[in-house]
Length: 164
Image (tube, rainbow, N blue to C red):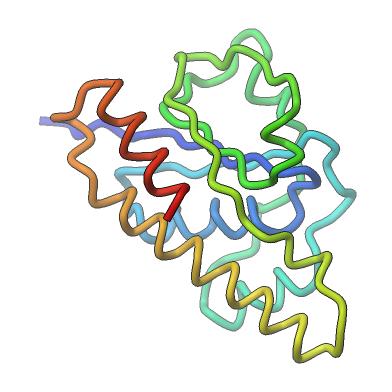
């Protein structure tokens, strides 16, 4: 019996840090049950160099990751999505499209590590904190009994994860 693969989109403003991390973490930890994707409302031209460094340091592949516009996931013929999580507060307030597949949505507010000021070690520490937060949330998300929960129960659970 084939197991369903859940497609999850992570949205942020620029798609250069948090959403890229979330995509990479889910693709590693989801072990084939989950496929992570990421996009931005106003995508950057490239991934933040701190993110590339962090991904490599923890053994996550950076190849193939790139900032994308959310319209790639909303256009006619786009893949159906099962979940869409906004990570930036500004993106959560944006008018977003009706996604293919009518996914369960939630806002998982996450500090933008790019906006952290200070010395290089302080910036690296901020990126590490964001990664740890995303890993914790995604482990909880992955462990949910997705196949046995109805849509409303899933919505409640993913909202709770975002508040934790």
